[in-house]
Amino acid sequence: MNDTKLREDICRLGRSLFERGLTPGSSGNISVRCEDGGWLVTPTNASLGFLDPARLSRLDATGSLVSGDKPTKEVPLHTALYDTRSSAQAIVHLHSTHSVAVSMLPEVNPRAVLPPMTPYYLMKCGATALVPYYRPGDPAVADAIKGLAGKYSSVLLANHGPVVAGDSLEAAVFAVEELEETAKLYLLLRGLNPRHLSPEQVKDLVKVFGMTLPEHGHDH
Image (cartoon, rainbow, N blue to C red; front, side):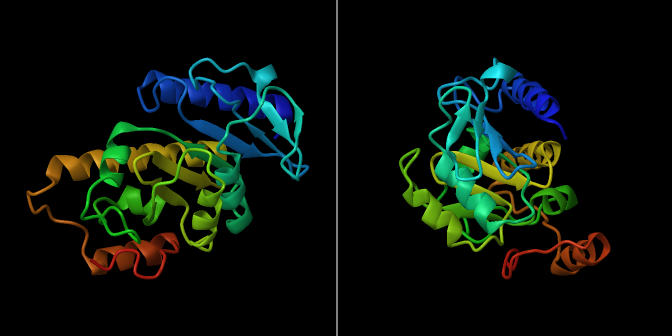
């Protein structure tokens, strides 16, 4: 996909996420891999609702700024996911309310933050890992992401928000939306003993759709 189209898609999808209240103010960031090994990323302190295609940060394969505004301080986070998930072509990080809320609950399993509630959550997100709290922009978060060894395409940063990688920008956006809706369902049903998908139903989805879930991803 050419550079101009990628820039337009980042701005269009960023605005969509912002207008639906999925990441407020100047929070959240988006990056997309380019054909030359570099990437386009949203600038620091930029609202996803009001991005300028010409001012997006263009980084080379080493992560150095080539053109555009100063990039988001979350570059180490994006870099770590790209480095450990070779299939990742785009990454979306939001501060969506329900996902942040779930990341703060004491009972969540760090290897599978959400139970297998719906087939589309499993198909788009797999299992979601919880990464402990780090100050935004702290390079140490990269080590925590690398510690997951590329097994997870969706991650919750404790007290901060979701980070989702996809094989296209659209796929990453759809997956982070599915994660947020599942977090909302979890909070709505918390304490009501809802029926989750059974291990047999999860295995059936894995078989039919060729999914790869992290080991122990949904063993509770």
